[in-house]
Length: 418
Image (cartoon, rainbow, N blue to C red):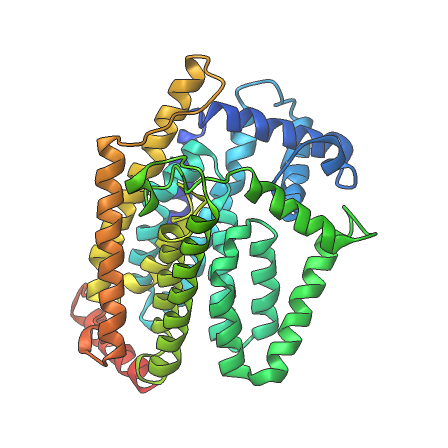
């Protein structure tokens, strides 16, 4: 049944591959795939302007080589080679969710969790229609959290390093993973984990730059970050209420990151104080807080940065009743954000404009941003209630039938005892 679900979800994505994502993005991805396939890894960054971290280039090279072998470059079929990458990682994340839920409840309920993720419209749209690569770093972040929970800190650090080497916004989860490794393994395991992560970074970077890999990686991240010095880059968050593509001043930059820094401190304090009482689901809730906060509070945030929150919501959906409305709301707002922005990006591209749309004051932008703000305040309220030891965090597994209910109840008791 799990194979059938994953195959069906992959077929749906495959049928959507011909739909053009953002035309400028697809042209860029095709160029990166071709450059990597024709020239290999060593000279990639010398031959093209690319602000994607180096782990992506391995994928450009591998799937670009497949596209080259089948003469897909310059044809509409190149969409299949590009979108195949995030589609694979989408279903791989679904399988990770299945493994985790099955270990806590049972296989039948775990199938519900898989369906909630692999058939999520925002997840499908981001990967199969737009063709963005957010599914890759999300997969590595979910795996990193699961390995940390399984007391495998070095492997958790390796997979976390892989996520950062795919997308720099994975940094949002660094404080949580570092704290949890320290809590479960102590200082010695934290140090060995840092070494494992550093070795991973070095091994990935060496084929590109062996003279000064640290500078190479820093320049890559700063180049991409510096290109978008605006309060909101099409992200429907708190900054969008005041306008999109507004110049990011020193004051707004510091304010945004100060708010996020305060949220990190509160989330870690919550985990420290309540982990013994609420268990490992609190880790996923803390991750949700950081992902959602990273989308809402700092400046220079893009429309897709809410994407990893969906995996955290899916992992908690079957256990926590008060998370279920968040899954629905954030799925809707993420889908609205990325689909609305993509529509206007392609509209401007079709009109021949050399610049993108500025949707400041658009009623859809304001409405979705306001809904996101209300949802964020709801998350903060849940944090406050958990700090006060209120009962909302008690697990309430989804009910399906009598036999499953009994098994779910037994597993629920085991979770509480842990």
